[in-house]
Length: 143
Image (cartoon, rainbow, N blue to C red):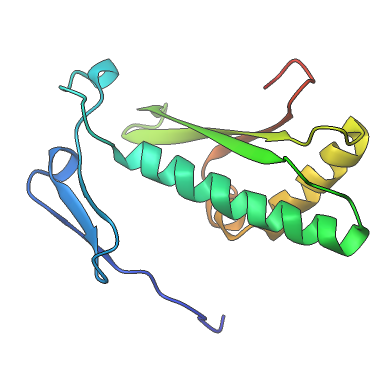
């Protein structure tokens, strides 16, 4: 792989209750363990950051494919839900649901674009085989 860009971030403090910042200083956030996991909440957490990145990346892949096929994605969005829990094999694991919403476009077309975007998106490629990813189309009763 020929690397086109490298992001760099550093975590300090107490891990999930610490601080993260990118090397360019654009992103600088305190972290907190969610209340659902026994923490104080009140700040972002790694799963929220992953969900935001995955949703944005997947939406870009979807838009790229739609541009090639002439599908209008005006008003479209991708929502990512990232769950964390104990894995059956020990340790922790993630589960992701990506919900694609494209108002005014036939759901079969959206489902086809979504499946293709899942093959193109770097986040999808990175987690394939390691993270359970569910693809959903808004209005299908799943998302």
